[in-house]
Image (cartoon, rainbow, N blue to C red; front, side, top):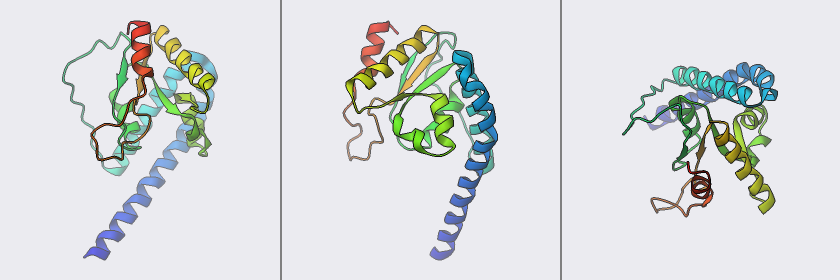
Length: 182
């Protein structure tokens, strides 16, 4: 029974990855067209990512359900902060955000073929290799807020793979919230 289970799991993973890549190739031309269009193009990329996530979830049998503790005004900008558990966070994020948003993401992800192009168009990138590059990301996040776009930050900066419920936070999200009164 264990061998059959492993074969089914492996097959499902291959199928899910295949769907992920095929759907990514389908949205790529639209992302390339929208990318140079500034703020409106960025908002369009997020709408495409939402469609991509909706289709991918449907293909792999995941039902998306949104549960909010309290409603928020979708016409205002916010700084959303959450734990980063896995790469499965991203499709859920674009599915549940029904307003213009930009995610702060690590620069290293742009190195992946195809995905990197979409990622670069959808995220505000942070290159943590220097203070100057980090400051550039903070300025981009503040600019998004000034354009009425909410931002989404994982303050732990990576997945929490420790035994603790939380890792140490980077303070950027909180400093931006104070400085912009968001």
